[in-house]
View 1: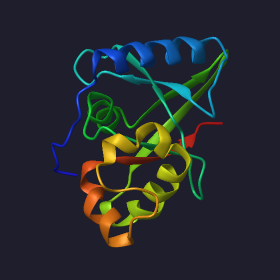
View 2 (view 1 turned 90 degrees about the vertical axis):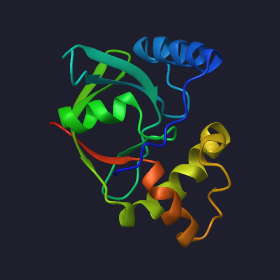
View 3 (view 1 turned 180 degrees about the horizontal axis):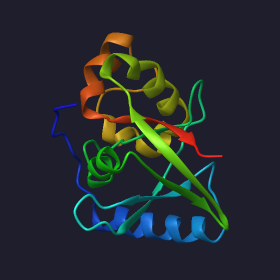
View 4 (view 1 turned 90 degrees about the horizontal axis):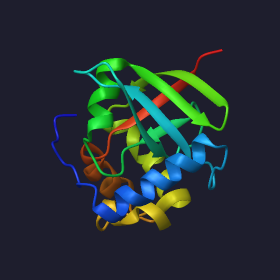
Length: 149
């Protein structure tokens, strides 16, 4: 978890993210996208961005394809947040996975979302070996989330 790996958001990606987040707030989800809200660790204000929650055993999971981003740092401090699609808002708690538990989740995430986020994983993809995925794990934080009832 000590990695500082982060791939900055381009202007095009920011515009696409804003559009996808806007749609999610209005109830339109593309293949399961949702808008994540997490409190800023310094400001305490809600920060929003679209995410691809991964349903998987023991999950769902949130994976940071870009690396150790602001939302990741905020999630570590806040310990949870909200997912929203339309009027449905789900509050959750989050626990970050240790690197050795990430390969199976990263593989599953790349199988589902690789077409969208694969460029952030370099040479690693859903067909990579467990060893390759483990080597990439420190660059990609993963959180297991538990939806509050």
